[in-house]
Length: 227
Ligand code: BV8
Image 1 (cartoon, protein in one colour):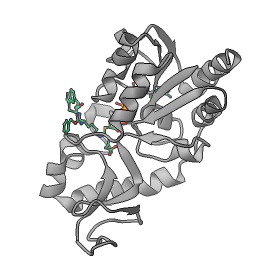
Image 2: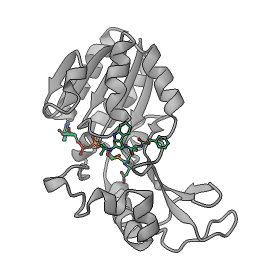
Image 3: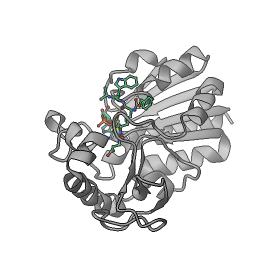
Image 4: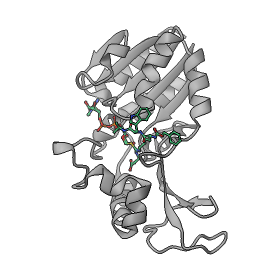
């Protein structure tokens, strides 16, 4: 069976990482437009670097949970395309390989000048690009207004899949929030696994409400029994 899974901040929440839409729409105390747009980085690179430098060690010390491990098992029995909006590496450390990090990753650095990528050190502030020496190091993160990564591969998988699951995402950020509708229109069975309803619940045939560490392992066991 061809399965596409999209995960969001809700699955990292049970590993202790703050979700994107915490209290009052602030995110680690910042408004999105002040820290997660190219304009914000041009306006105040030091603030944006501080925001990511602060999140990097937290993500590094977080541990994968039962959701990450269950999804890694799913790949052993089905043709799985695993897409995450999360910028932590919990799926990778939880045993999944070939994870599509459509919004980039905290542990990556990118040169805004030449496009060179390298593993992010503790802080990127003021760093020179190791390839050409330009002082243009930025987090390898897709900000608002920037094109998410590997969209062609994601859309092809959505058009061809039998099952699409959205796990732990509020469905407020596009184009990821539109994936359920694309999969349903292509004939897939769509399932949403979340603590409660989301902005995209209407796009799903099936809903499994509860903490992902409970609903996802059970769902993976059921799917695996149908291998
Ligand atoms: C783009 C990196 C175009 C930053 C992020 C319509 C169509 C296309 C675009 C748009 C559109 N309308 C508006 C846009 C623009 C914009 C957008 O969507 N804005 C929104 C706010 C309206 N989109 C973009 O800019 C995207 N780019 O469209 O480019 C383009 C075209 C041509 C050329 C160039 C460009 C880029 C979006 C990417 C932004 N970057 N992340 C960073 O992380 O530092 S988005 C950010 O939000 C995170 O990645 C996060 O993962 C993501 C989504 O949030 P969620 O993961 O859903 O997390 P959230 O906290 O919201 O929800 C948590 C959920 O978990 C909740 O539902 C909760 O109930 C649940 N939960 C909690 N605990 C549990 C749980 N569930 C289960 N168990 C639990 N225990």
